[in-house]
Image 1 (cartoon, rainbow, N blue to C red):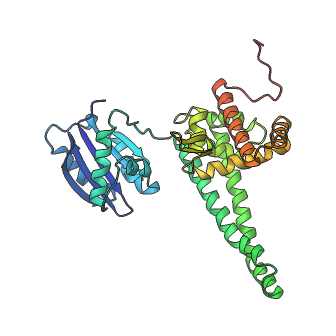
Image 2: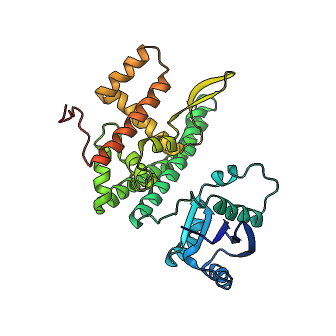
Image 3: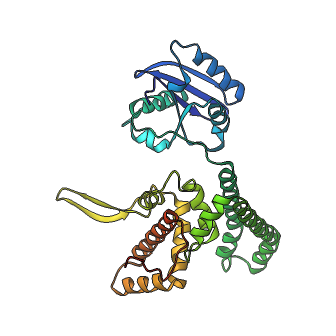
Length: 335
């Protein structure tokens, strides 16, 4: 696509800062309210620019959660070109930066889009059912965190404070914790029902959970992070995204560091995959034997578990690619 206008947007709860770049030069900047009226105000100003065409413009912004919703909805209806990029990616691509404010950030985002115009991947909206699934999983995470915030201190305080006080604190918190557990169970049921109502989600969910050790919540999280395997369709890319892909750490003859995983991965997905790996080495006979063999050979347990995580990822993507359930004793027909 031969883009002419590059529009960078710095998004916040109350404001949207727009910067328009043409041929590497900032044309103008405008700050408006983060509302439909504010977006319309900017678009009216943009359409007044000479030679402006919507189909040759690129709107670029960072991931900011729900604060993007008004803007994305507006731009999607206009069928414009949208890029939603990681804030870390934009920041690290521009070298050393001094100073920061909303106007400058918008200009930097616009210039990032201009400089990387040949490599920009356009954003496409997820299906409504996938968006609903994402919000349900986010709600589940918040409920679990709330439960941990109440229950974990009580376990840690036990034995270090007065017993009667400890019992009283437990009693006062018991109803809330019980209620939170019920809410989590209700959300789990809602997630499963939502998946069952959609043919494509149900198909993919059934394939993923056919692999022993991969549970319902892990499968649901994989579905939304890969966008039904549309945004990420390679096991290596997904392993990198999750922070379980090992990378070499060396330079010349002086630096010979250990091969290790990146700390920039999605820690929530990595945690779920770790739990799946733990279950697998206990109940999946093949992976259990693999784990025991490697540990007995002197391998670090965490390194072996990371290898199990990678094996699970490759099995998931292979099964999805071939549209078939996982078979423990599968034999290739050509063998």
